[in-house]
Amino acid sequence: MQLRDVRVAYPGGVQALAPTRLDVAPGEFLVLLGASGAGKSTLLRCLTGLVRPTAGEVRANNVPGGVLTSRHLREHRRRCGMVFQQHHLIGRLRLLADEPVASLDPATAESVMSLLHRICKGDRLTAVVSLHQVGLARRYADRIVGLRGGRVVFDGPPEALTAQREAELYGAPAPQRAAPEVSNQELPCSAAVSPLPLSL
Image 1 (cartoon, helix red, strand yellow):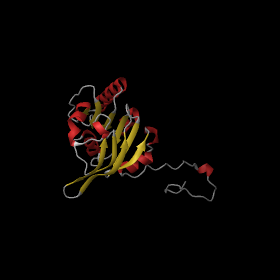
Image 2: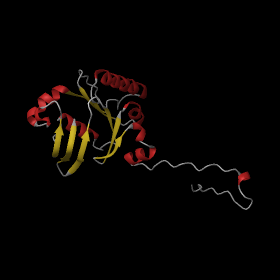
Image 3: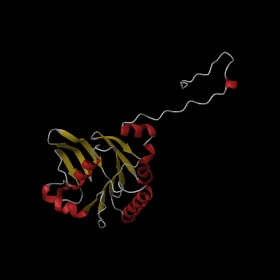
């Protein structure tokens, strides 16, 4: 599945998704991360044809000509399932999951993600999963795509999502490194201990 410069704008000029290019490899377990309203659900719905892009193309190998049009929506949806937050179960299809563990406690969420991952890998299914839980994304994703304000701001393997990148993704200040502890014995006799953090 591919997005080629796909843009989605809603009535009133609200841009839900900026022009986006995205390739999802066959058999890939891709996780979308981002704050509420970042564009994750809109991107998923473009991939399934539930939302029609304002501009750009959605491409899929399972439709004639490779470009998803209104004429081929039914055929595409027969081969492309979607799991919503209400946990409707689907058969062995390419899986798109919109926050499938959002309403679950941590232990159950872990079990559901483990099961989903095992099914997809065992049956060689492509999965695009929208999550809020960064820890689950790090454990199960082959690749993470981070959105902020309708734009892709991160695209890479889980290990590349550093604390700095995560903070940028969610708009939070980056975690500060603690200053090293210095004992009074290590200070020269003329030095004074300051309550201010030491510069590194």
